[in-house]
Every structure is written in C-alpha cells, then in structure tokens.
Amino acid sequence: MSAQEVATAFIGHYYNLCDANVDGLAPLYQDGSLATVEGEQHQGPANIVAKLKSLGQVTHVQQSLDVQPSLSPSAISIFATGAITINGTQQYHFAQYFQLVATGPGAYYLQNDMLRICYPKDTQLTPDTNEIAGAFMNHYYTTYDTNPDGLAGLYLPNASLHFEGQQFDGPAAIVEKHKVVGQVTHQIQTLELQQQSIGGNAACIFVTGRLSIGGDNPLQFAQFFQLVGDANGDYALLNDMFRLIYA
Image (cartoon, rainbow, N blue to C red; front, side):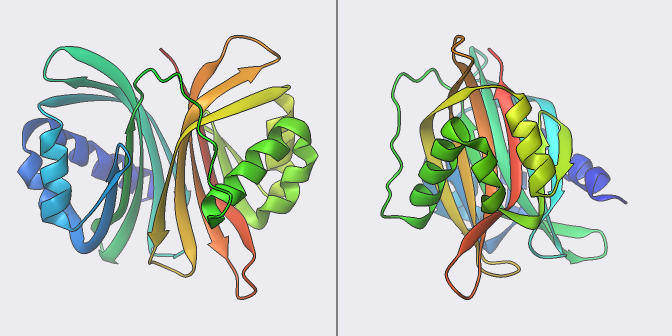
C-alpha cells in the first residue's frame, strides 16, 4: 500500500473509533505517544483516551487529508481537516496532525497527535522568542509577510509543502508557491510543540491563526511543520502542510 492509502485507511479507522468507541483508540497509541488537545499535552494511551473522552460525544466529517514522508523512513506525517460536532449541538472546524509509525508489515501506531478545534478567536499570539520553536516561527512568518524569497533558506533541500492539497518539493518550488498567493499578513493565534522521538532531532509544530491576502478580510488557517535540527544546532523545515479553514 502507498503512504496515502495507509494514511487514509488508518485515519478513517481512527475517526470511526473517536465517534463510536473512544476506548478503542487506546491500542493505536504506545506509552511514549504524545497528544496535544487544545493546548494540553498528554502522554500514553490511558491519558490520551481520557482527554479525548472529556470532549464529549463527537462526530467527525473529514474534509481533507495530506500525507508526506517523515524524518524516519518508518514514519508518515498526516494532516487532516474537517468538521466536528460536539454533543450533537455545535459544529466547528478542526485541524489535526498525526505522525504514524510502522512497527512491522501492515502494523502502525500513533507517536504524535495534535488537535485544534477552530473556535472563533480574537486574540493574537506572539510566539516566545526565547524558545526554539517560537523564535523559528516568529522568523518564518515575519519573513513570509515581508520578504518571501527569504523563506528559501528555512527549508531543507528535500523539503515538501502541501498547500491546499497541492504538493511542491524543494525550496525553490515551495517559495514560488508561497509568492503566487500574493501579499500575505499572518496573525498566529495558537502554537503547539511536540518533540519527535523517531528518526532524529526534530520537533512537530502546529500553528493556527488568521491571514489576510492583499488586505482582504482575514481567513482562518492551520499549518503543520516538522523542524529538523543538525549537529551544529541549526534548524530547517522538512515538512510543511497548509490548509485554509473555511467557515
């Protein structure tokens, strides 16, 4: 099976369990698995399942699924968006990142899971520039908004971008795609970080916020990055997945 087929089958199974039998999610995680749900981080199957159960009765409608290779050859990066109904009343949009790791032929578990429900937000977050992830993201979005050509140096040579389902490989193609969007202004509203323990020194970063294109009315967006560090303490992006969250 291709990575896309594996991801589609696994994540379809995941959301079916979320909606019908949350306790059945436990075998999909391991003791070292991390899940960040609305900014709260939980580790291990029992804690992760307990947090998901605390959300109430949910129903998911998956609307997009983007898949990229991860740092480790045994892992897949998955970015899903869709609609979620909570307790049969209020419907919201959601964005969720997963890192799926193979343990053998046809066997996988979730190492990383990051969920954001896209409630209306009026606040803007200024990332902590004393933290690596916050400093990098602050630099990334400042560069994007003022000098998009400068983004080329922030991507690894083998980096990939999924932008609204379209794939672009390598810094030149990625920067060109960002530039054709037009003049963009970003406002970061949430930023979550998880350390990645599979494949090397890397961090998973999940951002939501608003952006304005050419001064038009702001749109909600969600974006996932995998930030990879080298022996010299320098960092660059391997994975970038971007989706607009339409109301």
